[in-house]
Length: 161
Image 1 (cartoon, rainbow, N blue to C red):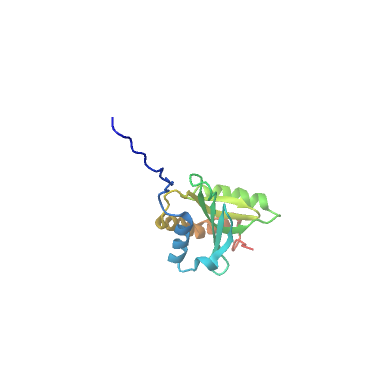
Image 2: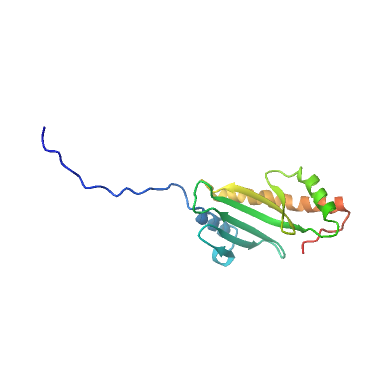
């Protein structure tokens, strides 16, 4: 046998594929006509939150959570629909749960004292088109949900603040 030549050890680095989810969200925000830096509300090592004013008194919240664990990273998008009053809260919540059966691809939940229409998706392999689709689902059903809720509660308009 001949001489065995030793090679220097290589520094092997882990290469993670796909796009950075923060970058995808920023591109989505730019596509909607906003500046991501101005919409950035909170940035930490494990989560980032943007607040985008979509109408006069409505904001879309986009929350990127568990950024340190790529397999568990999720993107949440939500819009406040109604402020749940203390008096009559049971009626509002019962009506909202009945109406929620008609929602497609999104959910209604109670966050603080607001009813929120939202969508959550895995950030793994997410594209701008996925975010746009989920936003459109929320946007398309928002008016219907409010109208159905005001009809069910026999109100002229549901209160947002």
